[in-house]
Length: 132
Picture 1 (cartoon, one colour):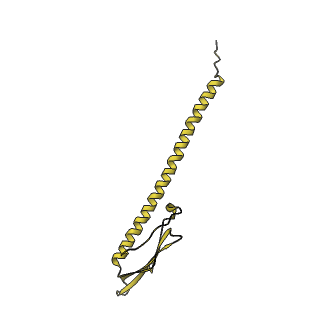
Picture 2: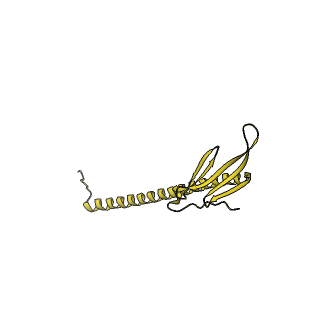
Picture 3: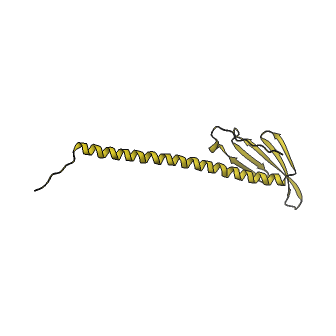
């Protein structure tokens, strides 16, 4: 004889509920971990940019003859260099805080370089000062 065994409605509802709960927990855990990963990545990018700015600024300050403070967020450094003819020349390097105090730009005759902190700062300001 053949046995016709079927699942009752209660069994189907219980199993479906368990699957829904497990799926919801997995989805919540996954979205939470990805947002933490994004925050960690943004923080790492911030510190990498800060380290690059710090290294470049230290090199420029060590090499400079004069540091002129134009205002609270704008500095001019005069750095001796050797030009194409082999003679001493002065390179003027400027550091400015721009874009609502969220980016630092280094301006020189060799090209400009932006150090962008806006992705991590949100509405905060980046404080940039050269102190003697």
